[in-house]
Image (cartoon, rainbow, N blue to C red; front, side, top):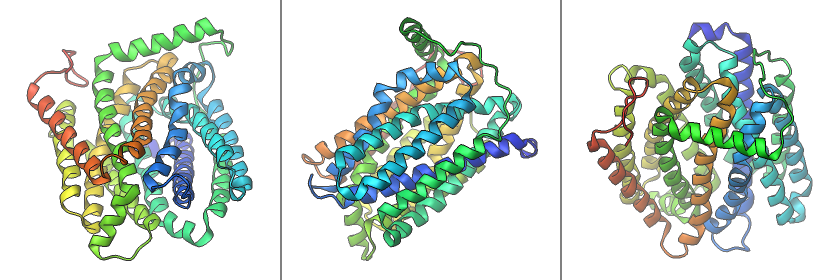
Length: 416
């Protein structure tokens, strides 16, 4: 861990990651506050689903092409480009948000999310060009710790700040955050050498994307973790929108608290962040007692039980406790997954692999969050949460006792 502290370029980079996470988390909370004020589409779940649809649509439409573009250019340059134009989108939202131009605002949200399809895979793909391979796990863990520390602070105070300033001025804060990201990126030096020409035609585009897709699905070490993360994030997409609909208000009322929903949501996400930081700090120690595969298999039924318990114990303080435990489990799985992808891909294809990885992650979440508003008109939000927990538990129990699968980082066998 001390080695990465001496790497000044990595230090600058994780500060950029922290600022980008600050901007992204604060922007999401600001957008949530905005849609909570809209009554045209009925319930909060419906409005949240519309918002999440426009955030998730670029993942499906543009995600397949992002990796090919990223591999054609230096990751640092892609980050500079993305952060600058994200700041442009945010300042336009700030200028037009009070004019009730919802279609135009959703278009800007779409563009911002599209640019994030370049930014996020580039960010993950750049780390191996800043640190040595033996420092990758430490770099990923330390980077995640710093990001989530910022996330905790953001979620804990975002609700209060937005309540005091209003959501319009909060967009202005987001704009300046991304401008700082844009400026700091210029001072980072990396050792990346791009093997491809920046020019590309449609057929090369298609062929290179298919190569990356085939590589991901034929590499068992990567596929094992990607598949499990996909299912977890689909479930969490349903749970998140259900929670921000009516169920969070139900929990607040049954606990006897008088607190605005946006503040309560901020506390829930803040405690989730606490769990994520604890998970990052504990993952290396826990892996001394469990193999990676065994740990991921064990976490699935445990996570299912935690989600099911939210349905039966409707207490806000218990929800905060569950958020911590969920954060610990979630970040351990994500840390293992990102490290395995980085270690099992070459620099020339890494952008495409991470792009496909984020497509699978994001498409599942986008579909889940978009459908929740529709499903909530048929069954109550609390039942959606219960069903997600039961399905995760059943899947976890089945895969845990199947005794199949290769061992991550060891000899390749059959996946389950």
